[in-house]
Length: 105
Image: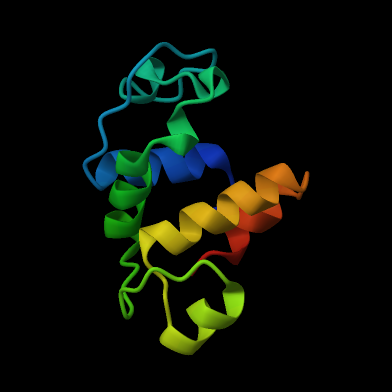
């Protein structure tokens, strides 16, 4: 498991977890990433991205359909769904992307 610091780190980890990116990129980092376009709005909204990132990061916890932080803390929900919800909320609130990635388990 690698500490995440950026969207690029998350994408690299998701690829290691088995995610297959689609599209073209504006910033080739590796041969795999040269197929990714973060700016098309699809990368971080792809459930397969979050599933693969969760696999690579070893996110495990009691699986539940938590949609609130209190519920997630109670159940120890660290699954990909909860992390995706937190990303979306951070994005919609105009939060700091780097701090978000660094806050993930």
